[in-house]
Image 1 (cartoon, rainbow, N blue to C red):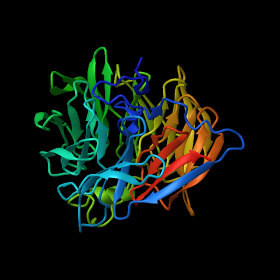
Image 2: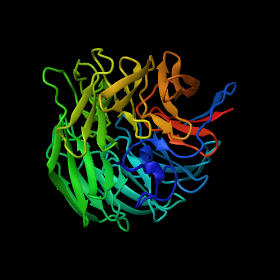
Image 3: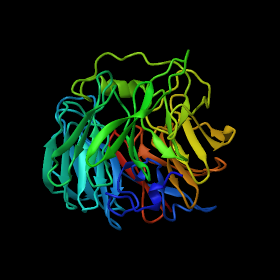
Length: 435
């Protein structure tokens, strides 16, 4: 059975509840702790702030009360490009310490930050990787080998760092860096292009890295500081006769990888087709017109595949992966373009629908495991709301305006005091809490 990131400890990571995006390398997006525990008669409130002229990407936790915010420069402009890291007050969201503007090779893309077991923070932004101390002082910098934006950053079980460039047509490349001086210890050319972020599953049989291409999922094996393609495991999610586009990230649960196609959203393509990435985009591209699909692919046998068409509406689109809760065997899938979200239970007969909602979620969903509170967003004409749902029933427990006009497929992060943190690429950040 797949291990749970939240059960910890996670080798290589600082022992916090949320030391990286999605809470861990398997991208299960499930947080330990008391959750919001929203009760009848209580309501959600929001403390909203703006980082003008910046793209906030994610919050992560270090020690108790230590909250960090990572980001870059906003897209669709070429005037400047940089990365940044802040230590922020967990209640007011005001900066307590800040890095200088960090080079990114001219690219504007949502990078990542991780909190390492050595106590320092590492971040990718554009084509650079940086090591920073807890007070946001830079101690090491590395220009990465490919002149392109790198999509995500995770830690391997031996403490080395792994990252991959984002490509729409050319083969992507993986780099493994040692954590002391960020020297490259291994590099691997991927068989195809890859857009989505990677996930890692450390098992008794080895350490495996999963990544998507336009039509397939591949697995790499990591051992002794070296990556190699697992030739015995690769699977296709190409559905004959369907007008599909690429999948973003995978997540791991119940000895399967879970993911959604239809990732070529217009806004994402506008960022990714610009050169450098995230600058002035070329003419908009046509996108696939098919419905949303969500997939389960066995980690034991990649030909063991389930494909669900959850909403059967044309012109589907997403910019983030699904959520799968191994405890309840519930899959949460959505179609951002068509404003649909639902829950399905996985069992011997496949996926059985539990509920569906008219909710336009763009963010990566998050779950408070103890309280079964599912955190999503819902973009309405008047702005973006953070919504709390019951995972089992879909019942809405609460919602509050985030302070943002739009959403962007970024990441939630749990807090310490019945709260959760929210970001969007348009500069807004928020603490959502029980008032």
